[in-house]
Each structure stands twice: as C-alpha cells, then as structure tokens.
Image (tube, rainbow, N blue to C red; front, side, top):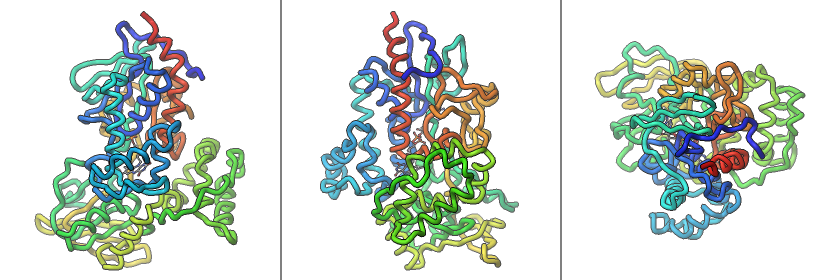
Length: 475
Ligand SMILES: Cc1cc2nc3c(=O)[nH]c(=O)nc-3n(C[C@H](O)[C@H](O)[C@H](O)COP(=O)(O)OP(=O)(O)OC[C@H]3O[C@@H](n4cnc5c(N)ncnc54)[C@H](O)[C@@H]3O)c2cc1C
C-alpha cells in the first residue's frame, strides 16, 4: 500500500524516517518498519531515555506488582509472532525475579515491569544490530522545508527526513479547577504527574487520589502494598466508580457494524445496554466484542454525538471497557474491606493548607453533604490529558504556533486522518507527518493499549515501506 502523499527524497546522506518518542508506540513503529523493509530502512528514534522502550507504563515508574491489563498473549511486539512476549517471559521471568512467569499461559496478566524488560531487550537487540538508531535527546521543533521535515534536537543537532512519526505518548493529567487560595495543588503536597519516576517518595500520612480509574488503582495498590505505611488512602471521583474486574469472558461477535453509527448515539447505547442485560449474556463479552469496530463507529459519529458521548457516557464506558486484572481487583477489595482505601463519589470543593505538611480537602459529595479530609499528599490520577493546547512540550507548542498541528474537534488529541497522517492548522493532511498512539484519540478513540498501538504501527509501516525503501536506495 502506498502512502496517500508521495515522500520527497532525503538529502544525502539522509535519514528516511525519524520517530519522535521512544515509548512503546515509537519502538513498535521502529521495529515494524525494520521488519517491513527487511532492514533496508533504519529509523532514528528520538527519546531522552537512556534506553527506549518502556515509556511511562512499563518502566521504573511502575511498582513491582503492577500488572498488565492485557493478557500476555496480546502483548507481543509483533502480530506475526503473537507468543513472543509469553515465550520471552517464560524464559527470562525467573532470572528477573518473577519465577511464576515460567509457568505463564497466554491468558495471564503478567507484571508490567517484566513487560518493560521484554520491550527493552527487543529494542536493544535491534539497536545492537544497527537496525534502528537511538538519538538520546528531545525533539524541540519541527519545520517543513521543500517537502522534507527538519527536526531540531535538544542536543543542538538536527535531523532531516521525508517522513516523521510523532509518538509523544501520555501527557500528565489536567488538575481539576478548585478553590485553592493557598496554592496547595501547585505546591509540594500535590503530585500533578502520577507517573513521574523522578518524584520524591511520598510523606507518611493519609493520601488523596483524585480520580478512580486505572491510575488510581495503580497508586492504591502501591500504597496498600507498602508495609511501612498504615495511613488510609482516599480516592474521589464524580461517580466514585472503579474499573470492573477483567473476568474470563471471550469477546462476543461485534454487536454493531460501523454503519450503525447512522442510528445515532442514543440508539447505539440503548442497544448496547439491552445486549448486556439480555438473559444469558455476559456483558464483558459484549463490550469486548465491540473492540474491532470501535474506531470505525467513532469515526462515523458526527462531532456533536462524540461530544455527547464524552459528556454523558465516557465514564461508564471506561469502567466497563478498561478493566483491572482479577488479582488487582481482589487486592483492591481487600484494601477496601480493611478500611485502608475509601472511595468517595463527589468532587473536590476546596483545598486549604494545614501547616506545612498537611492539607484539608473538602469534598462535595454526590449524594449531598460534605466531607473534609486531612491529607499528607494529593495525587492527580485523572488520566492523561490529550488536549494539545494544554501540553507543555516545546515541540507541540511550536507546531501549534506554526500551524503544523491542530487539536481535533473534541480536544482529545491531534487532528489526523484515520491512517495517522496529521493535519495542519488549516485541516489539510501533511505528506510525511504521522501521529501514533494516544495523540490520535480524537480520530481513533481507542488507540493506546499495546494491541492497538501494534496494529497502528504495522499498518503505518506497511504503508510507508514501499516509499521509504525507494528513498533509501537513492545514491
Ligand atoms: C500507567 C499506565 C499503565 C498502562 N498499562 C497498560 C497495559 O497494561 N497494557 C496496555 O496495553 N497498555 C497499557 N497502557 C497504555 C499505554 O499508554 C501504552 O501501552 C503505551 O505505554 C503507550 O506508549 P507511548 O509510546 O504511546 O507513550 P509513552 O509511554 O508516554 O512514551 C512516549 C515517549 O515519548 C517521549 N517524548 C515525548 N515528547 C518527546 C519529544 N519532544 N522528543 C523526544 N521524545 C519525546 C517521552 O519521553 C516518552 O518516552 C498503560 C498506560 C499507563 C499510563
């Protein structure tokens, strides 16, 4: 398959493909291009990490006991070898401190750090073989010049290539706007980025987790599993709903086809609800069965309907679709039963400082009334904020200012074609500039889990390979 827009040959000596971001998405793309081109194209991955691959989800930022929320059989880096991760985990798990991995089966939820080690090793092999190249720095600016892309780097260098993939990944969550006259939420008592591996250890004392999704679950398990801590953990979200447990249901045949989007959101949701409640049905199988058509359904919903979904249905969708492994759900249940984790439905109404080491957080509860908690730390677990205008990245700011990128209509990420080609500020697709992963949420909606990233990366590699190999063959 040819790219929709022709690529311009690179200057000589040239780089054919620059991938900005070396998390799982960027590395999946690099490896897919190498496979697809038989090693004739050597992508350059730009990422400040010493070793690309882990990103925020699978590196030191995660706790030893944090589990993948996708079974091992779905986490291979290549769809051609779906058992690659499983086989690797069986062979190497014990040596790395997870002896139980030796007996793992495809349906198991293995530790995220073990997965990080797998990705690191596969990327390391490709680096050692010279199949991909890692430039350890950040990309600070992007400019178009004569059909090529010029990427400025934080180390003072520059890369020029006909194709650039932006795989910028998860951005820290947005802090809720609350009455905070003492600046607690912008001070040291508040951790605004829940995934920051450089953050100092938390002080002793009660902790408030803002949000009740999978990031909250991560933190509750981490704090609850720390035997040196005995203080309670609180979580607050508008509805106080936690992700459901994964269960063992196999996805049912898809309930809708993309054409059903024409029926409108309300009809779709009603049919979904009925199917989930039908006698003998397993709602997990019904929800999981929608996965293959989610992106197409989303693409065909009018913008107003997408916004309506985000306003009224997204929270419910998330807790049913993005579920926690049963072992994590069991651990969360135990923490709640022991009174170590309390989940509140409501919102933060106000925050005040209580001396240097505590904050008083007033919650306006959903069922009326208020509760005030004295906490030693607040952690923002409300999920990645994809709106480009709120991103601190100098690269993103420059691209927005220069009209090279634009937010999508719902503000979930960047405007793009379904194949990942990014739009400029005027809504035009740009030859040779692609997005990958979470930045395409506005276009694909569900595009952040490894199986989705792998599919996007492989499709992109398939599209780019013919043009890139022709360019590489140039003198
Ligand atoms: C805590 C957590 C747990 C998760 N668990 C799972 C799971 O169990 N299973 C699953 O399938 N999915 C999971 N996910 C989804 C996850 O988003 C993806 O699996 C994957 O990690 C996303 O990879 P990414 O490369 O898109 O993003 P990231 O991991 O965020 O990586 C992006 C990279 O880009 C780099 N970067 C950004 N800007 C620049 C720049 N200007 N120049 C150079 N480099 C730059 C960053 O430094 C970073 O290394 C999880 C996500 C989170 C946040």
